[in-house]
Structures are given as C-alpha cells and as structure tokens.
Amino acid sequence: MPNVPSKFTMGIEEEYLLVDKETRALVVDPPQSLMKACEEKLGEQVSSELLRSQIEIGTKVCGDITEAREDLRRLRKIIVDVANDHGLAPIASSTHPFSRWSEQKQTEKDRYESLTLEMQAAARRLLICGMHVHVGIEDDELRIDLMNQMSYFLPHLLAMSCSSPFWEGRNTGLKSYRLTVFDALPRTGLPERFASYAEYERHVRIMVDAGLIEDSTRIWWDLRPSARFPTLETRVMDVCTRLDDTVAIAAMLVCLLRMLYRLRSHNQRWRIYTPMLIRENRWRAMRYSYDEGLIDLAKGVVVPFDQLLDELLDLIAEDAEALSCTKEIEHVRTIVARGTSAHRQINVFEESKAFGADDEVALKNVVDTLIEDTADGL
Image (cartoon, rainbow, N blue to C red; front, side, top):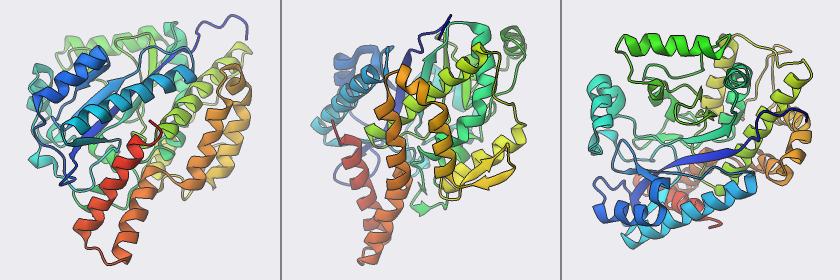
C-alpha cells in the first residue's frame, strides 16, 4: 500500500480482578507485597486501578500481532504466578459474578480521589474491567478521520468480547453489563465526530479551560485519540477471559483500521451512519452479544452475526495477509461457534444449578472456570 503514514503498531491493555482462591470472592485489600512483586517483574507495564481488587497490565509497543501475543502471554503469566504466591488468582472478566462494589476499597491515589469526589457513586461502583487496544496512527488528521469511520464496527467488536453477564450474584440478562455501569459517567459511549483534529482540540480546550476536565484522559469514549500516545484507542470491548480471544479481536481491530486507510488511499471511505443507528447495534451487542444478530445499516435489517462476520472477514482478508495475522483473524469464527466468556459463564452457572447446586455454589463454579480460562495457554 503506497504512502502508508503508519506501520499500524499496536499495544494491548487488560484489566483483571483479583480473587481469593479459597472464597472465590474479590480480595478487598490485597497485600502490598503483591503489587511490589508485580512491579519488580514488570516495571511500568503493570499498574493499580481505581479499586484495590483490580490490576492493569499493558504490552509494550508491538510491531505485529505475534509480538503482541507473546508479550501479553508473558504479562498474564507473571500476574497469575505472583497472585498464586499470595493465595490469589486473577480473572479476566469484566465483572465479578457475585462480589459487591459497595464492599470494595479504593486505591489511594490523588487521581482516583478526585474522580470519586466529582462522580460520587457513579465512580465508586466501577467494579468493572475492560480491554483497550492502541493502534499507532501518527498523523493527527488521519486519526480523526479513521475514528469517525471506525465507530461503525464498535458493536461488532463488543459482541465478540462479552464477559460480564453477572452483577452482584444475579444474571443480569445482558452479555455485557459492564457498559451499563460505565455509561453512568459523562463523556462515555460512542465518540463524537469531528471534521478535523483542530476541531477536536478546540472542543477539548473548551472543557479544560472551563475547569470541567484536567485533560483529554477524562474523555472515556468507546474510541478516542489517546492523550498519551499517537494512537487511536479502542475501549468498547469487555476484557476477554481467554488469551486467544483477546489476540483475535485485537488483530481484527487493526485489520479494520488498515482496511479503512486502504479505502482512503483510493479516494473511498466507509459510509458514515447516524449515531442513533450505531447505538442501537451497541445495545444489541450489550444485550445479546451476537446471538440475535446486528443491524446491517446499509440494508436496514437485522442480519445473523455469522453472516456479517463473513462479510467483514472478506473485507479485511487482504489486510490480514499484509499484517501477517490471518490465523489470528480466523479465530473469531471459533469465538462465535464456541461462545464468548459470557456464554460460558452462564452455561457453567445453569449446568451447576441443574446438578443441584444452589446459587452460591454455582457462582463459585463460575469463578473457578474464570480462573482456569484466564490462565489457559500460558
């Protein structure tokens, strides 16, 4: 592809919940030695989160999906091993099946203190974890143009990543309950659209000058220009329990962005649809994952997800080959055939109940499955 202004480098961030291996509940106040040991092994690639029962890791800047997979595998394994030394285990799940947000303790950092002071209960109940994928796009104008077009695909990515069907011991009926919690904050949801990077900067400056936000890190859209790196950061996804699923969705995301740039290089572009319609697909992905299909916005009808997936994979086949991730991309078919983490959690709960377990035991069985699947393949 001539004149590519980006090498489409990538970085993946994942947030995990820390559970007590005996009780399967979240550890409210993990020992300081755990974070110290993680930092000694991982340096700046690990950090604390808003609540003490959460931990976040981030890969280095990776040149391709193979490098990203290996670094993510290494990070996950170290967190699993260090947690195990402390009688704990990480689970890559966007909500905990039964622990309550009101019982958690907050990490003592000025940034988190100011957040909860401003947002009150809307912030204190953020007992949720996500997966963020950064894709290197050095050109500011290109970053905004691709953000405008990429919004269309956010529901598709969410549908394949769902891992939050339970909240405080109840099956919510949603495959991604996480976003109902996160959407209570301002400046969340689908990104705004801008005609240029300068227009985006003007809007951010208005909010900063008005004292509403410190900087653009307080803008939490599903997709945003990163405030720290020359990247486009996709944040809509639940954290994937299985490593293979994370890698597949990240690969698909990068290929979609490359496809959009490829169209642009031929004076073409993806059609821009109204936020109303994209929000409807976002809701369907939250509610059903891929079970009930999504709206094909060009046709104006709900289409089975596997049909939409076939079309998307055809669109990005050239890009997957160029980025050497065809194998990883094909794994998204496995996700749809096998089920997301949300599907697996619900199945384990229902099977446990069918064999006579009460809700408490069934939910602990779900946690056991999450522990196992988070460490699978490491």
